[in-house]
Length: 231
Image (cartoon, one colour):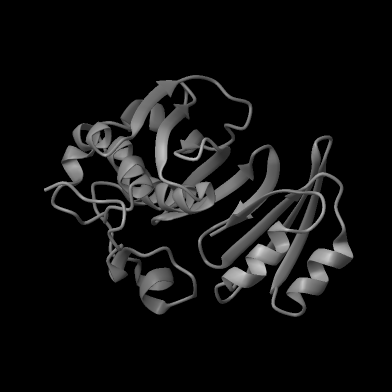
């Protein structure tokens, strides 16, 4: 069976958006053989797909040669998990083992390489460079930290901390206007962070519920907005 990109992820393996005794104490439903090398990469792939905001057509995955992932990413299913997550295919799908073969049929050119990168600060670090069908690209550094948990530690060069436990809105601007962004959000954000780099400013707002499309459109239309990410 070939899945379409509109397929919904089954509830038991959705990205976690709240604390629950099943997911945070006992543990979420996962596929073996490894929570760090299989379940974690799948959730990273799902989050990366949301941040990309488009159907992925090109994906490059880099693992540091001295990392744990470099040794076992194929034997423990990390490659299939990353692809399944990107394509929004359930981790428990019976077609999981065929993801490398299915990816080209679904329009995704995915490649895995062992290559040093400066952000590699964890045995299960990975660097993802993704291109969507709209031509837009994202680069993110991720860590699979055990038990199916993960962290996106940087997005397009900006330091972030995204774990899938909240809804995230990130606004990249060429200059940055704290008052405009924060006034639109009001008290919706449970936390807000502002990251400055030499290329611009990233506003990172976390909420406990999804942000309405009309609010996202308003943020995207602000003067100086370069790009908006929502997950």
